[in-house]
Amino acid sequence: MKRMLFNATQQEELRVAIVDGQKLIDIDIETAGREQRKSNIYKGVITRIEPSLEACFVSYGEDRHGFLPFKEVARTYFREGVDVRNASIKDALREGQEIMVQVEKEERGNKGAALTSFISLAGRYLVLMPNNPRGGGVSRRVEGEERQELRETMDKLDLPPGMSVIARTAGIGRSVDELQWDLNYLMQLWRAIEGAGKSASGAFLIYQESSLVIRAIRDYFQPDIGEILIDTDEIYEQAHQFMSHVMPDMVHRVKRYSDDVPLFSRFQIEHQIETAYSRTVPLPSGGAIVIDHTEALVSVDVNSARATRGSDIETTAFHTNCEAAEEVARQLRLRDLGGLIVIDFIDMEVAKNQREVEQRLKDALHHDRARVQMGKISRFGLMELSRQRLRPSLSEGSHVTCPRCSGTGHIRDTESSALQVLRIIQEEAMKENSATIHVQVPVDVAAFLLNEKRGEVLKIETRHRITVILVPNKHLETPHYKLERIKHDDPRLEDSAASYTLAEQAETDLAYSKRQKEEAKPRQEAMVKTITPDQPAPTVERKPAAATETIIKPAPAPVPAPAEQGFFGKLFNFFMGKPAPAALPQQPTIVVKAPSGDRAAAERNARGSAAVAAG
Image (cartoon, rainbow, N blue to C red; front, top):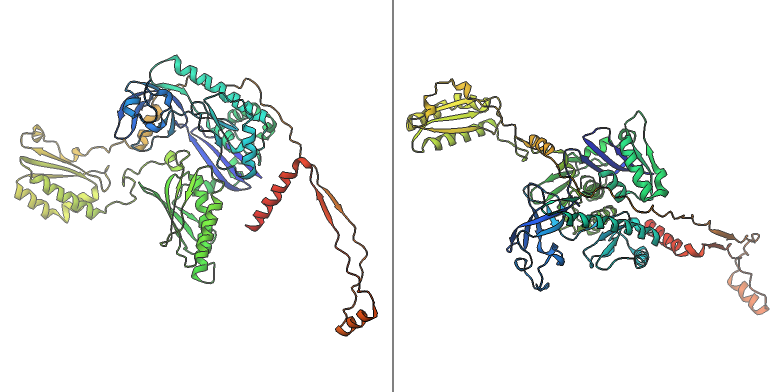
């Protein structure tokens, strides 16, 4: 049985996991000190227009300005009299213009947030786009007859002109009343947002996306999830209240977990979560996948390692690649890796095996909420795919860049670092008006320079008539050092302090302290907060399908088969006019009748079962 687990016993982190039995399907973590702005709605002010980029920069109340492409600007913000089809961004917009924007992508590294003026409000069954009349449709994940049925249901909705809606997968099988209720709630929310945006000028936060509790239930809950287990009272009350408003017929599935064993340990998923932080992920047969992040892409390398499952190299490679395909799809979902991803599979000679591995990966990615575009395995054994980034990756919210290696994973050894410092000392000594060079280096580097390279240091001092002061600093680690050139007219030359007092403390303004500064920074208060629906959600009784009626005709008593006659016996019977032996009775006939209302569904289920069996 599938379950949704909420773990909030530690106030710094709220974790939501979806498990199937004891297998981790998806994980989402919200950190108290990290503010997520995706889907937030702001009142912004255009600060700069860049015609070369066909975009503008918008101040929306945060430190870094957001990036708004021209194609993401609604036509209602264009200047009057401008030709909509041929207008340039310089003609259509102006600096200082106020505009309502929504965060489409979070800030990452040096890049500001990506913004859009086409607002989208997500509900349980629908997504409302109040200023985009051409954006309606049905989720890409809905296929076949269900897609057509959902379209027919949506055509019956009372939708104001100039707006559009997208049906989510949760809307499959829902009645018109249920979808209309969700639409009415989103309309109520939009009216509140629109009114708040007009009430004040300048840049400010209008609406903040719901908390992780609401988002998780709204986006991840499906009818096949049997329980929602929560281990704290506060989160339980939030979830219970939301379910009672939106899905009152499912509120009994929200349960308070109060056992002594920690919730995630009960379902044995803590070690599975740890693999999502690890660089290497083991495979069942003994192989492994290695996941590395670069500036351009995420690389995934498949290694056979100790895998010996197979009679030859081709079979072993095929089985390992099949396991890797399923695990890669799972890790992409758990870590929420986005952008360009390249998988280096083990080389396979047989084209049929390559196609099978591609199909395995495609099937494993079928349940991913993100949009994924797949390529084929190239002749070098590489597969490229692109995945939509739904939220910041798991590592971004919990990892900081290593201050020693700056994220490269490698550092120079002691001798290489010492030689680098020695060469820089020589360069600085050659500069005009140099009197003294102060160099703070790690202790081991200082020992190498003062002993193995003492003669080289003396040569530099003699040749350039300067003084080199090497200060071992216990607070520094290779490859870090600090070098300062002091000129002849510098008053510090008269300072007679001992050299060991020149050692400085290491800088503490690292990524960790930067995060502390972010936590201490005041956050904007949203003008529109929780909106309670005007009416409770309609309760629709879903009667279980009536038991299929099975009519089995009893088989007649068994009749022994007549002995087979030879050629002359048949010829004799033909001339004598004897009848041919009676045919064997037919097998019992089984007639299965499905209720007329569920006949189409029964046929679809039968076809689906056949497809699963075939696959």
